Length: 252
Picture 1 (cartoon, rainbow, N blue to C red):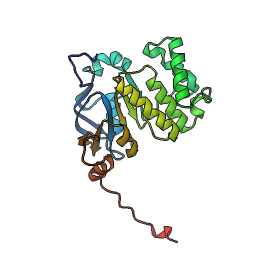
Picture 2: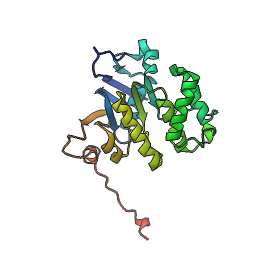
Picture 3: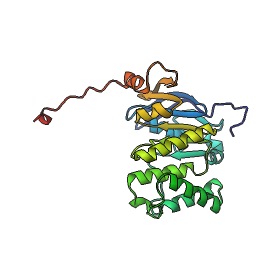
Picture 4: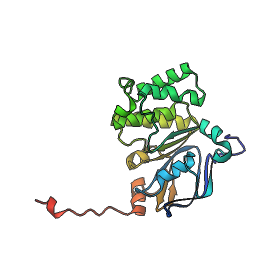
């Protein structure tokens, strides 16, 4: 996996489609993601989470194909997942386990020893301000704690590819700054990161590339560092500027 022959096509999505109840959600997605931090943007329902589910092997495309490091899930699922870290839309926590137990359970799945898992878990819990709540059962955690626990689980084995669905949603400012630092550090170390976010200011700051989905298609693909317009301007030029109306019954 990730051989020199494959080059920089770490994530390769070819004409991928996905329908739900006969309604098209992804309409022939062609996307190659190279090392760096790629932000996948779009309005609600644009297909972002669906595309991440295809790329993480949770679902199969109805047509087309997806490859991670040159490999497909049908024949190489174990090898792909060993090198993949995923923060899914539903978080994927073991609800009856505590925060620390979730991390200790996931480490061996990725080939980490108990001592390696414990040491890495302690580091991540400290960075993400979860140390005091480490013995809280997942189902009793706040949304922010749950999100940070799921993110720590995705980072624990230092994956070669990270797929993150809204990693900054519901996160306090201090932890958000830490997550930005961690993602930058991982990217500089060679990890390829594809994330979704509605926080355009963060995307502007950390993304080396931005892909905007609109109605199930790729409508824009650019580098924020070289674009003539900022991420927010490009985004609203595609999805439309908000035109809020003041409700009459709000006026009095």
